[in-house]
Image (cartoon, rainbow, N blue to C red):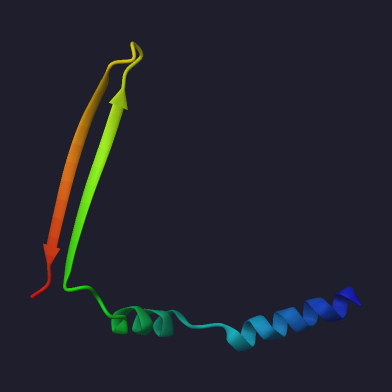
Length: 63
């Protein structure tokens, strides 16, 4: 019984699989945002417990 289930799963995986080219085309056709804003904050703590905070803001616009 387990043998038949594994054969069915194997056949289904081949039938539903995608090639690398198909995946690349889907990624290329995917809609992209016109602008993107990101705020990142990093907190570093040393052995003595002293912390230092760094903040990074990233803005990207697609014309």
